Length: 166
Image: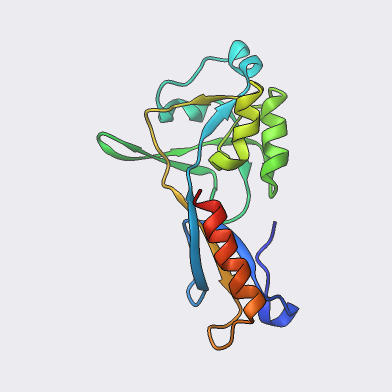
């Protein structure tokens, strides 16, 4: 996972999942994803299960290093926004690697819902802090320019928007 230089690299389209677009990004929003806080049952058996986001500061956290997560995790609460500085046990730029680490009991992570679903379905991770919601993420098609969009790119964007919103 990295931020591409679309024009310089000759790339027609990039998909970005973020809640922080860069100034000048030319985008079309395709869908929305929700971050989930998850850990394995094994990790939770060895450590206390957090009941409030502030308790994450005492846990080993698995942190995505790109633009939608950092060592400060934000949650919406009845009282407003709760920011928690977490202790990264592992930092990676690949959400699948973080989910696998969480499934193996290494800590707590916050993947997008679509990425976490297979792990939730097979029971290798369970959701935590369900009463507290992180800010949703947009799934965007990022274009190198808004001047000319090749037909094949327009068709792909329409297909992705339709598919992701089903």
